Image (cartoon, rainbow, N blue to C red; front, side, top):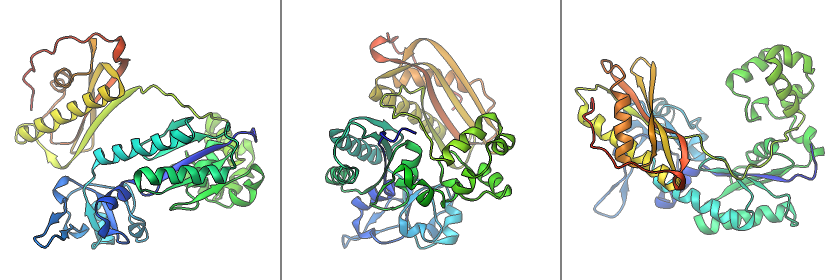
Amino acid sequence: MNSIRRIAHLDMDAFFASVELLRYPELRGQSMVVGGRTIHQPVLRPDGTRHFFRLRDYAGRGVITTSTYEARAWGVHSGMGLMKAAQIAPDAILLPANFDAYRDYSRRFKAAVAQIAPLIEDRGIDEIYIDLGHHHDESNVLARRIKQAVFDVCGLTCSIGISPNKMLSKICSDLDKPDGITILAKEEIPNRIWPLAAKKINGIGPKASQKLSRLGIYTIGELAATPLAVLVHEFGRTNGPWLHEVAQGIDERPVITACEPKSISRESTFERDMHAKQDRSALSEIFTSLCMRVADDLQRKGYASRTIGIKLRYSDFRAVTRDVTLPHAVSDGAQIRKAAGECLRRVPLSQKIRLLGVRASGLQGLDKCSQNEAGRQALLPF
């Protein structure tokens, strides 16, 4: 591991929930979760105060997108079903997700960071890696400058980890949340990293963690002390050496500042199973919305797509996909809907549906594409 490298991982603190608290500051300090559908929007009372829905009011199979730290203290966390969360924390406030707002704040904080440190790898809506190798300021000074810049443009806090590589920095950004700074030198790995649970390493998921536990390996230090031959025998010739390296704090991956997307997709999981005939109107509206959102994403990012596909998940959780490759790349919503409709007619629609998705792949830059005139929209199954 090259000790000259200096990489930061910036993670926004409870990002979606924090954006909502800017809109509803009266909820600060309370248990609050984001998830479900827009029907749970707060209601303004005649006296100017707001009525907020509670988890106990929810019925459906939505999941939590994020939660405040107060809710997390009850064991309510991202990915948990809202009905299960309601059993744990029935009085927690429930707000619907507002992804347009989250994307706006995401663009803001990334632009603010780029003014200070432009070598950024975008890892999602609420986190980035930053290459600080060319900066002369001390790590703590740089971290504070970046955090202040983010707060100035967003009013939001973030946590930053700085170390010689991406893997360690991601671990560090989670060690002092919220609003923390953690700086790690290579020689500090045994004292500060090895006592942590092995699952703290990004890439060790629940199944791998369970297998490590069965082997008597619970901490990163115990993983580091495990002979390479044992890890190769248990996890294979690819994952075994990887586990051995990351446990030693080795990660040579560079910060990738430009990455071409392979596909762009949108999908929706329904509150209840829907039938192609009985719920045709609602499904048609959702389907059109997904196509238009994919088109908007393509145009905003400067791409057109040669291959349009769909994804359905039936009520029995079985999934099916179909796609079609077009003569010319498209980015227009009507053309995407027409192509997706062709895919839709090729799947059985006798069962009820719980998820519907639209995907654009085979991406090309808009400046290289010639658009065909949008054809008339074909009659769809719904």
